[in-house]
Length: 158
Length: 158
Image (cartoon, rainbow over all chains, first blue to last red; front, side, top):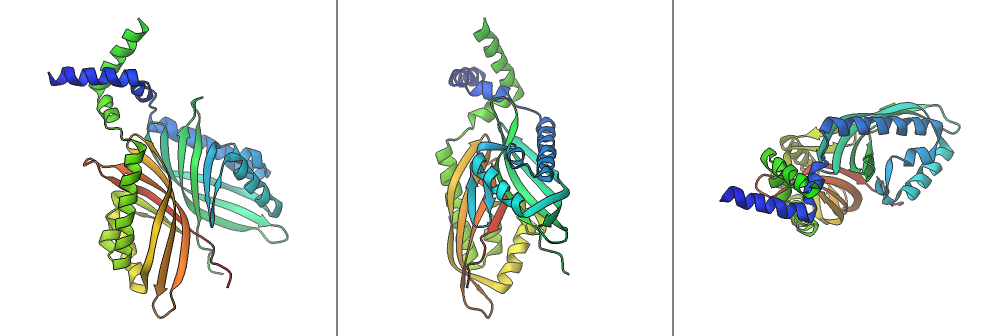
């Protein structure tokens, strides 16, 4: 009887549209691969000084957590990168995904970053950081950043 | 015929254990209320200088993103708070949840913080921040922080 009740409940969930959501579930490895590929495109965009390219891995309603404010929306994030590129070049660098956890259409990613940055008129310096990002699966199956909180490491002692 | 096929698929998911997971889904409002309540307990623990209490809203395998490293596990996070409490008191303050998004057993939260902190031997100062946290539903139905990335606002000009 219990099994029948659960089956009926499962039919109810199908009617409510919940089962197709479950049926879309991806393996954690597949999500991780999509994230790693997106971050490689992101790092390439930084090195080109391409604000639109950098912002393209963010969802249209994504939030970037900055020191002092939330930057909300891909357009605002793109403008923020454009401003950054006016005063600095990303000479080299990459992001390294340390951990990915997936639940349905949402993924949590922990990672580290290392970039060689040159502020206009200054010598290049290496900047490292640790970050937490969340990603959301889009209707076309791609994964984009929903929220990003990058925390710069303390500057090394001189 | 299509409907029957999906129904059979749904039974398959039930057998695989996926439907019970979906059946546990909570409303975003309920998750938000659980998070807000946990953060109130957290702020109270900070004001008591209670490291175990502060760490109790973190999952056993949670990650705290700090400037320079990941602090992994509730025990390590508790030790980090204990160290902080040796040199500072949290006189007052709170966290404000700005946005919560839920997918299955995972939730993403964006929020802000404001605390009046007194470093030993110094005058109290107000410290504000913006943060991204992820939360995970536990087996007992409670929600605990899975990853936390708090970003301090720039210090106000003096």
